[in-house]
Image 1 (cartoon, rainbow over the protein chains, first blue to last red):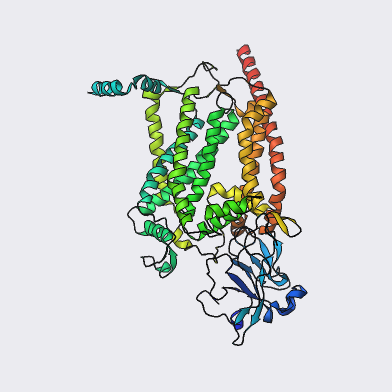
Image 2: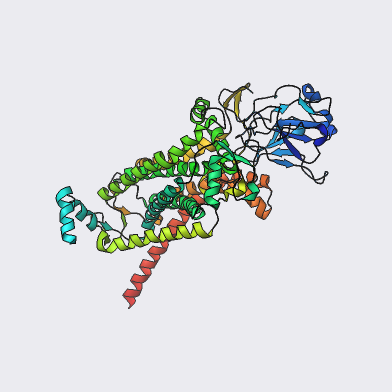
Length: 148
Length: 446
């Protein structure tokens, strides 16, 4: 759902920008709740084989909380001119950890040590986005003994 | 009348000898000795303005909906803490002036302390018998940094919430105990329990200022008992102090300095906007803002966090040391560890165990000056690296190139500064020798 609790439709997600979303009934003020949702060209996706079905129509969802220091990923770098621009990336404004939404949230740059946890998506009967399972990894900053 | 009053007090406290000693205390004269005093008077302004702010600030994370005068925030959910700070800024009489003066005073307070520490290190004022004065001063600097951070974290605006998220991650990253300590402090995984705000509040308005005040008194008493240091000069020796008596000579001067510091701080608070929290908006976990920067005195820490290449120390899928540890914990440990170790290290390296009441000129101790300059450069590089995103905004130099540059510069520049500073000190000494010989020769001719 979006910030006001309205179900988020797959058609709401436009290329070139990101949306903030939450699992239905989740408390938005918990680290595990916020999601960043972007639409990529399905041909550009390089998800691992076991996540092949996680991105209906090229729409991917990741935890919005940076795995470095817990800030919200509030920047989306979207290429303005394909041949020369750097590829799309999700960026945290605190310490500029840069993640690749096309490649399962892999760290492209910056101090983060783990990829962004991905949330598998499916499209429901009315075109709404639904989670098909839990996050691929632990949400938020790491600590001694956390298993990734 | 005054005589009777003095006798009244003396007969009931026996304070006359002490007062006499204090009034006759001799202050040596040099501009750099005023840095500590500036810090002292900034602290007084902080207490005074802070008391006023507590009258209106609501240290509570209870949720409320904004219905005040500032239209852009209308209808937004926020904490009482943030709402009351917006009200202080926009509705309370003199609220914005006092809040901004408080913020400016905190920034100036830390500037003055840092310059004071530099002065003390560069002139060797930390040497026997004043090591304790120096250690107490460093403790105050550490507490001042924490106190400042808590101050702007209390507000619960978007920037302070992001700062706390980072602080939480840094605490979490401490090997072995991190997660337990973070949970004990916050009471629950971030953003923690509502009580966390009251914990910060009691620390900010009572525990830390109390500790700083206590250390301040200790600092001053220790200085009085060991006396001030001075630079060498005519009639000035290890055994005699030359300067102004506290009364009547020094008192008016220091009162004037106190009033000037207060005046400048209130001018800054009244004329120069700082931290316009109504523009940031309330903190919410899913939100972040671009160009997030802490107050200047934490810039070196954010630089350390940003410079670090991205890796967690893991064995298999078991995380040992998460990345924020390096910039957030190790860097401050190294910096303060080095500062605390300085007097004993220098004693060991030089074998100098004598009493020192006379200060060194930086050029006369080339190694100490060079190492201090290199050390300062290292921290300054971290600081500048922490501002790379601002540099990108203003100058357009790509962020990633800057960070790669600073990752190298953080090793190269201090080494370069070390060599250059030592060279410069030796050259200055040499120039003085030449000057002396020339003057002697000219006198001889005349």
